[in-house]
Length: 301
Ligand code: SF4
Image (tube, rainbow, N blue to C red; front, side, top):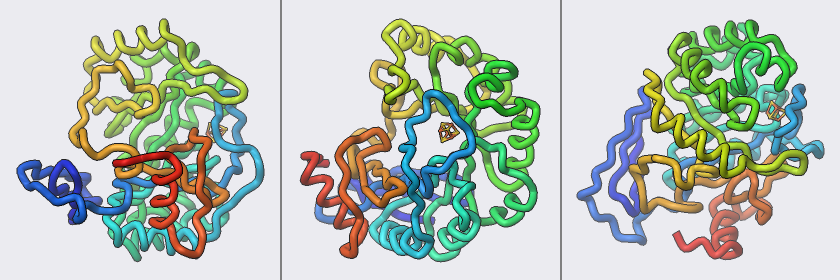
């Protein structure tokens, strides 16, 4: 169990079961709020072996050092962070990926999660990850021919990877919502139910140098789908793109960098992976870098 003080009260979290409880009748003075973001994502490498057109990951070579990541996670853990999400690029391509997860699980009380295209989740790696990760997010952009066209990999292999991953940890399915995938949300939700995924995370496409963000008409279609859908799997949506969608926020006062921060594969702390402003995490540590980022971006949360 981990305890976190924040503007909404006392938050209790168990990484093994995913149990969350908020005691919102507990009023906590600001000076006692946890100084770390509730969740931090860390891009371990920019490297990826797929070539999705809508990819937002930077394309220059960058890989984080194992020991540096370990120090950041210990500091975040001590400052009240509840979980880390490894990403990239493709995090499983980091040469020490399994070691990083193992060390995070052993040396901190953080929930260890990662987002992956899933195609490399085969037994030798899964065996090393077992017991050291608490949630796995697998990207499933469309089904069958759509997936194969967008991701360039066989869909049936992905279906098997989903089942294999579920042997070691709960799995969530991520879908980038765009013109190609909006019509396949029912099929993706059915897949999530079929493989007993715990969550379906909708990621409305954001603008990158090669694609534009989803337009008003697509947003409207997505909103209609959310309102009508009754999947037997938890639905979630990324903050980027959630405006106007029917969402429920259990922590309405824990905003900005108090809620979430991203560290890219070059070691810059950012408000999210799309943000232009970044502060290099130096010797003074990750919390000091996030504090400087608060000042630079005017984040008063
Ligand atoms: S799998 Fe992810 S990181 Fe790799 S190219 Fe596709 S979107 Fe980018």
